Amino acid sequence: MITLADILDILKKDQNFREIITDGTYHYNWSKQKTFHKLSYDSRDVDSETLFFIKGAQFKPEFLEKAVADGLCYYISEKDYQMGIPAILVNDVRQAMSLIAKSFYDNPQEELTILAFTGTKGKTTAAYFAYHILSESHKPALISTMNTTIDGKTFFKSQLTTPESLDLFRLMAQARDHGRTHLVMEVSSQAYLMKRVYGLTFDVGIFLNISPDHIGPIEHPSFEDYFYHKRLLMDNSKSVVVNSDMNHFAIIAGQVATKVHDFFGSKSDNRITNSKAFSFSLTGKCAGDYSIQLIGHFNQENATAAALACYRLGVNLSDIQAGIARTSVPGRMEVLTQKNGAKVFIDYAHNGDSLEKLLSVVEPHQTGTITLIIGATGNKGESRRKDFGRVISQHHRIKVILTADDPNFENPEAICSEIASYINRPVQIIVDRELAIKTALTTTKTSDDAVIIAGKGADAFQLINGKRTVYKGDRTIASQYL
Image (cartoon, rainbow, N blue to C red; front, side):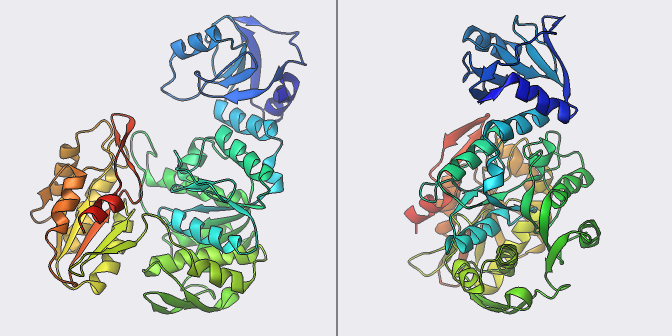
């Protein structure tokens, strides 16, 4: 629970309090003992003891009307909606929500050691490596794009890469109450843009890489803005781990020069050597030989980042080696084999850079015919369509089937046609994703051939017209037609 007096104290310290007002009437003698037993930003989930936060461009006054009818007595907002109940007015409701949630759940971050990964790609894989490393001798919780677990036993699909602050601190409190000692999580650029981690300090922040992505009307207006919000993790971490081979590394190196840090990659002492499909060696702090299930140099980089982050927290090398060896990630470089020996690769690659790395890993292994199945999301990440076309055009022997991938409010066939317009050769368009997969699997003949299913990874839904609709999942469908 939290009192109104506590809330106002939090807001004033953050210089975020304006006034308490009801239909234009200012409150001077408000009840300091007013207590809230629940926080919510969902107008369908309120009662008389709820403090309700009004946020988001999609909010409509009728949502608040219904909440008041259901007993709501107070709300926090950036404006007075004049609904006959007190409004606690602030300059930034998202900042307020994060700090109030942190206090409401009794500061769970203080009882967890928190590792946070950011980067354009690889966050989920690196987080899984760290989770499995820590699981050797500790009790970690995990919040990731793929799965979340707050007890180490049950896993559930996340709605957002980084949850809204109310949900994040609630999950952290549950992890604490389940006896978890560590939390491994992904922090997206949107998490900072939308103040989901406002006021939160991480024990180790890891920056994997950066390339243009999430740039569009409802995301970041420019690469500069995207990169800036990514870099905020470095400012809000006690120590950091950074890939020295990432684009614009000099900017990050300057930013963290006075902070406790480790670099990895070719411009550092922590380098990958003797790299093979399922093994690699490291020099530097985590020197040794490692087995790995996930093929590709970029996955070895993700493992290295996780290793250094955990080593920074005192984890021994034997735990690091064991954790990396047993890590697999649903929908990340999963490999199936058809009866004719052809390979089927299922990977979450959902932007130009990750697609380039995926194709570059598969091509040397599969010398026969390779068919790529890919689509692009609707209403976000629109620059990916041109990026896909550019990458595919550079890989001349790849056959392409364009298909649906979370089209949302856009026409999936139009999205496919746009991607096709950037490709320098004919491609096939099969909007039905299951039919596209089935069709591709019928084209293989020998063990040298391959099908690559990119984009959705382990997602068991399609986002259509703003709603998640049931989808069997790429692996399940591919398994049916092996």
